[in-house]
Length: 184
Image (tube, rainbow, N blue to C red; front, side, top):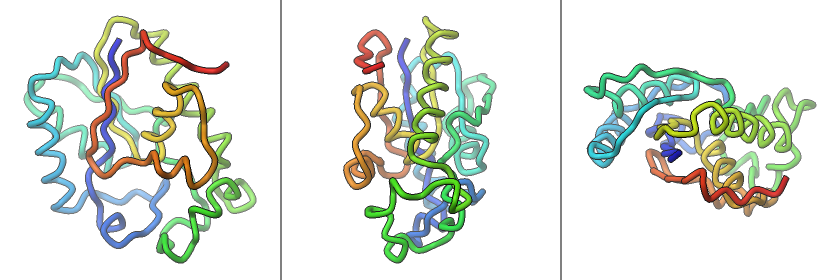
């Protein structure tokens, strides 16, 4: 099975440097154009299924990429972005996310790093066990994309090192499930 991971296109909050998390912010025009370019990039890729986060920015990106393929898009909460609780909407430069990444948790109304990573890993385990022969497109978020990279590398780095794995908007990554190197 091949998993193609695409981070959603740009939103106004991305452009303003705001932390989005579970806040449901749609794509801006730049994000729609990024999704169209990604659709062109993936035009020759065989895709059997499309799964996206239920958040609008991921759904819009998935719809643009999937247009003309005749595929239905399913959503799964397992690849929704991490909930940052009270920090959502904050300017990234003011919430010091690099230093605080591993501290944000339920006390802040959000989701801990551990709970977030376990959720994404559980989704991937379920996906791989249920769809062994398909090429699946996942349209998700920066944090989820980083967690997927951790799943396939077998390690989860702390705070600042984890954030270095977050790709730019509409970045594409491919993983072959036959090469999983997880540490269980």
